[in-house]
Length: 190
Image 1 (cartoon, rainbow, N blue to C red):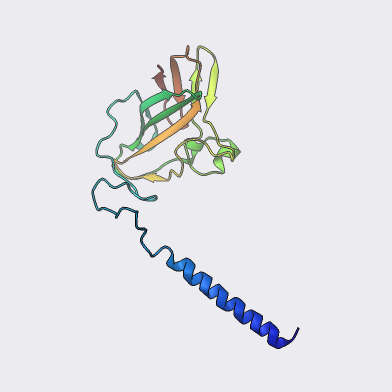
Image 2 (image 1 turned 135 degrees about the vertical axis):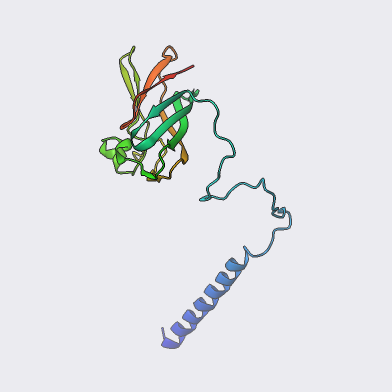
């Protein structure tokens, strides 16, 4: 094969690459005929990564656990689902007049949970009558199924949180939620 043929082949490849790139790049710029135009209403959903502020906080409080440095955890719901899980939702609030750092101790001591950053992974549910302890569930990579990425919380600010556990049997109606650095809180389950 001569140098001339090789150059001709490379030139053809370069032209074809530019043509494919030009066609591919322009495809997103053209509107689709059947696609509805975007509206600018206040009811639009926020995009990923944008924070939303809830106009109303949950009104029902099942229990409150008091922690260190003015932190409080108000539990708003504890719901069993058909899959055998119990999801606890609430608000972590800083009741102090200054910003506070959320303790890394809330993640617990288990290496698999701690390596995924600050979370509520150290939470447990205790059934004192059945003498059982339920730990926060984890995904297949070992991440706890809780709110994670906790760092600091401004003065008088709150943050919605959740924790997911295996559901205790239906006969269990009272459990104690225990979270490192917080007082235990008793929850009634329905």
